[in-house]
Amino acid sequence: MKRALIVVVALLAGCVSSGTHEALQKEHATTLDSLKQTEGALDKEKLKSNELAARIKRLESDIASATRAREALEAEKSGMLSDKSKLQASIDDMKRALADLARRKAEADGRLAEFKSLINRFKSLIDAGKLKVKIADGRMVVELASDVLFPSGSANLSKDGQASIKEVAGVLASIPDRKFQVEGHTDNVPIKSLQYPSNWELAAARSITVAKTMVEAGMPPERISASSYGENKPARTNETLEGRAGNRRIEIVVVPDLSSLPGFEELNRVSAQ
Image (cartoon, rainbow, N blue to C red; front, side, top):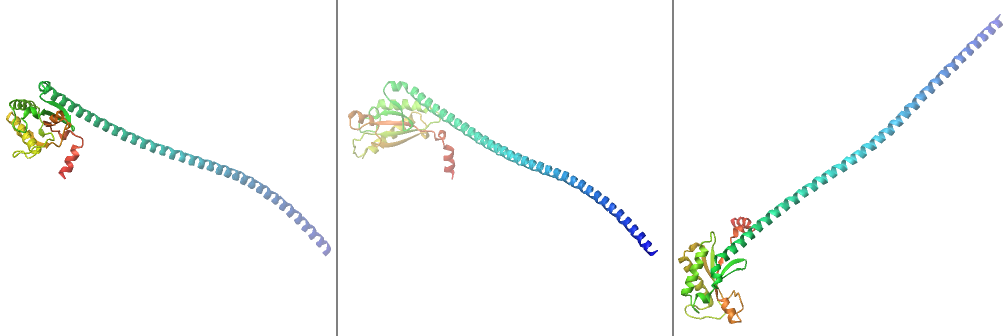
């Protein structure tokens, strides 16, 4: 009886072991299948992740390229703005230069017109050989030979000299807004007398006589002055009689209007300081 029980228990144990084994195998197969599915899903996710990483890398590359392109465009824009600014500055400089050139041309044309007008005013006296109109040291000058105006060594005007000076004074007085300076000149032949110790005094006396005569003829005294150069500013050679005669002269200078010259406003500012 006992032996039979043992056999029955062994048979039952065998049956249980066989069933458990099958169950375990089935569970193992299920687990393997699940693992395979999980691995497949992981592989797909890994593939997707790799694709996303590659896409992100491409996007980053595109962004970097776009950034470089934008920076290049900004640099080009900045350069264009700079060039535009320089071009505008160049245009402004050119406009100022053209305006200054136009102003200078107008001033030159004005001086030329004034000189031609002065010649026309004295045409009859020029044609008669009584005077010359010239440009000297940038100034308009009316030149009269002192031999025609004064006796030798004298500062007293001759009768013809007085008439000539009065005629000249009438013409010059009619020119508005201009001042004049009478300059006395001699040759280099020395003079020594009680009245005129040197050519300085003789030339000064002659220029003062001419200035006074012009005032008597109607020239406003505030518009005229007198000076002397003596023998120190010859217009011709003193080596010949003809040259010395040309150096004995009275010059009536049209005083330049400094307000029309370039830089006059700056001169005024400096002077005011």
